[in-house]
Image (cartoon, rainbow, N blue to C red; front, top):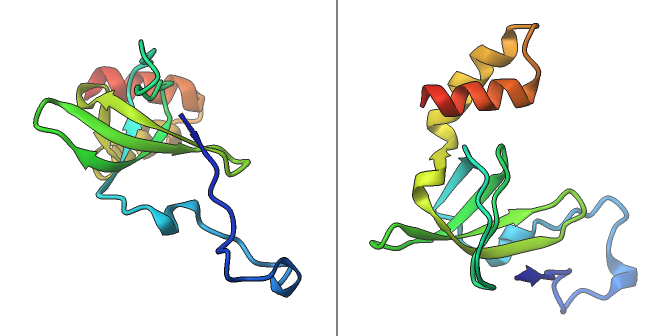
Length: 120
């Protein structure tokens, strides 16, 4: 599912400073931020497909093991849906491992993410 979140409606476009950067998450409450450790291809329209290394902002965690989340592209486009929690790890858990691996100049970021996925 693609969501479009623009500027607050009460702000006239010509009154917006040129350096204004809206945060699409301002309207959504994130409970956690996670990183995809594996690819996941959703099988229906309510699923959020994941690619290794994606950063997902978690909006809700279901006891069934499926989490509601949002991926924000560099363009500001949002993708929202449900994904299995076993495909991700909290950034608080993953980032230290990725940093150690990325500090090794022989590893590119994709190799580091793959290695982190296997280590974790």
